[in-house]
Image (tube, rainbow, N blue to C red; front, side, top):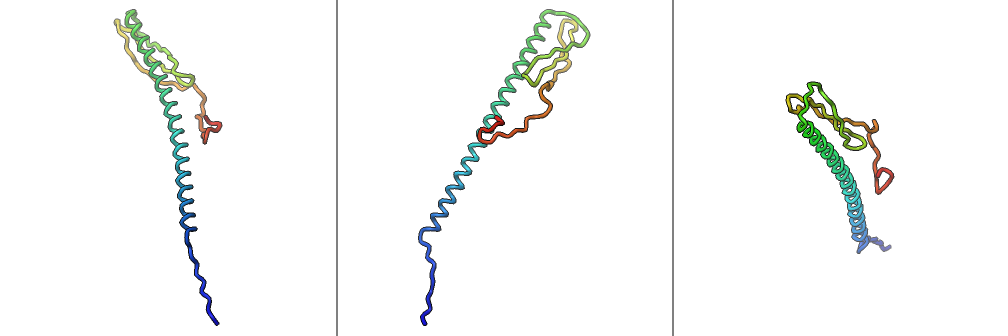
Length: 129
């Protein structure tokens, strides 16, 4: 009786499957990179808008204090003035007018928006935008 030998020859199938797997992996990583970059861009723009709003309010506050200095009024009591930064925050200045000068006692940001932070996560343009 003759023994039959079975041999398994792989000619091009495994390399094609491996190539498809590598291309799909690279494509999925490219999509994840694009989504991450867009999320970072949106967050950077929000931060830029918030920072610009803060410095606009701070500039208004400095102009207000300069006008008080120009008027030269005297009052030894501590006064408070509120400058809106955006719908969620105010810049609060505490100052004193004494001896023809304006003494800045303190400044702080007050959060006036909703108590709970936004924890939504936008994935591919979902509802969290």
